[in-house]
Amino acid sequence: DAMVIQNPRYQVTQFGKPVTLSCSQTLNHNVMYWYQQKSSQAPKLLFHYYDKDFNNEADTPDNFQSRRPNTSFCFLDIRSPGLGDAAMYLCATSPPLGTPTYNEQFFGPGTRLTVL
Amino acid sequence: GQQVMQIPQYQHVQEGEDFTTYCNSSTTLSNIQWYKQRPGGHPVFLIQLVKSGEVKKQKRLTFQFGEAKKNSSLHITATQTTDVGTYFCAGPTGGSYIPTFGRGTSLIVHP
Image 1 (cartoon, chains in turn green, blue):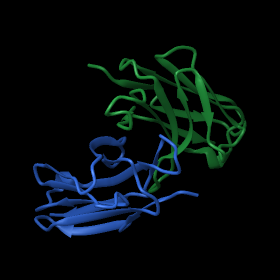
Image 2: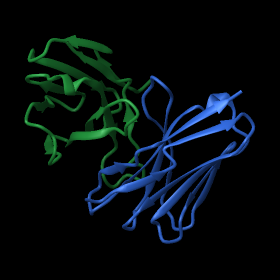
Image 3: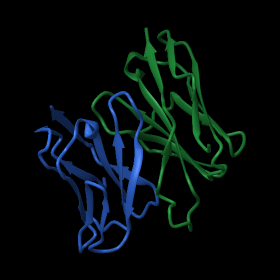
């Protein structure tokens, strides 16, 4: 089945120790998103890619970086995690503009990040 | 900035009661999506509404898009314990094609 896969599902890191979260998709969608979700809150968009075009949200800290080496894979790098970065990180994909379902997002299961 | 407001934040119901969550935008939305997130899970797409005044049904769930395309609602008839979760609306605002999520309504169903 076509899907969005995130690894690892759980990640523990130490304060200030860089961490990389990965996302892959078999849907062949052009658009990929990274969200941060804290308890009882809505997903907060960090950035998204339209193909290789990177779009950063204005309030996304510089501590968060992303790479998309190809259509299928996308990475979230947190350069120096702080205690406030502990959250669920969700990857999502959607079809390209021009398709009727371009706003329908398919989410991965998420990576829960703990910062010690 | 552009926001999508959603109320209520929490709703407790007895199993069998109805439930409604409301979503409002200050600007016209080209479309709106609804998602369900079970506790400990990830958001799962439920439906998209595009047309003014559109009404769609999925079994006990009824989705409406307002005539002015600035508001939407999700109504669940005769809730069941399987309906527990947080329901989010999302719509593109401010000329962007990227949807903005509402804060969600958490539904708690008491057996």
